[in-house]
Image 1 (tube, rainbow, N blue to C red):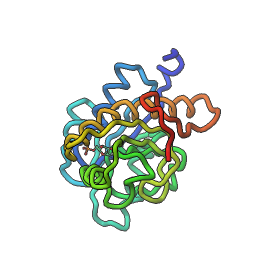
Image 2 (spheres, helix red, strand yellow):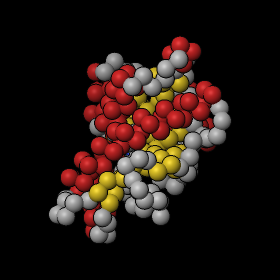
Image 3 (cartoon, protein in one colour):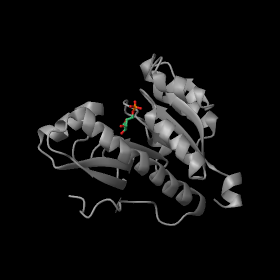
Length: 216
Ligand code: GRF
């Protein structure tokens, strides 16, 4: 990290709906790998999610946006994000459709499948891995992509792949995919942070080094 970046880290806000595991991972990698970013807010639009407690215990700023009234939720969320000074939003296990308008080209999502396969409404958590196994896939993985106005359809920044062993169940596959997520999300955030500070071409799809295959 250059001295300039250390003094001017990209300010990241993470949105979560559950355990916040991707936030914990990203926070650790930001510190250990010196990714020139700083998590300025961890927010949830669900009450009492475990990830908010976990993030607070790490010393991160947190907030819960009350889900009611639903018609003002997007505005209140935008206001909290703007107040935090965030430059980049990371949907890190956020299950509600995020209104991207204010944050176009400033919002990433991580999804636990090789999109465009096994994405969309209802495809989250073990539902994804159960569907992958039911389809008889021999590999799975994760995708980090730019968020757009639908679930899991924005253009891809990077993917990481992993093999599926015979007899694997959804829980085992989820754990294996999450190992890849722990590499993919910090790498994508680092690329985007570099782009935000230094310009150039917007980060887009690359196949990571753990794969010899191209995307379908
Ligand atoms: C990750 O698997 C990520 O792919 C997805 O949400 C999961 C993390 O959420 N978007 P959580 O921390 O388990 O709630």
